[in-house]
Image (cartoon, rainbow, N blue to C red; front, side, top):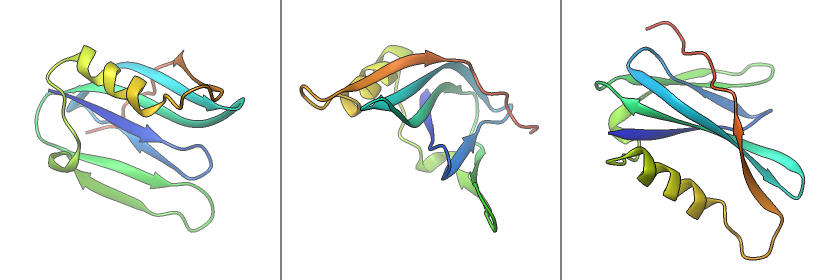
Length: 105
């Protein structure tokens, strides 16, 4: 099973741990601005994913992986990203990005 982890610069970041093998990452740009980074990973076992709010007073939440949408293949996850990021003729692009480092288990 594959999952998509979403981070929004300046708002929050979602951090994989050793139970999610990251495969690839994508930056989503809209009208030239980076709005989100998506990391696609293979879910090796049920886990909790860290969602870390950025900025002063930010909190860290642990979200059970059972709440993440799942895809049977890496290709299905890629298709979902393409679907999420297409807005007709608007200036929206997905570009390959470096993989984030996983957090300790």
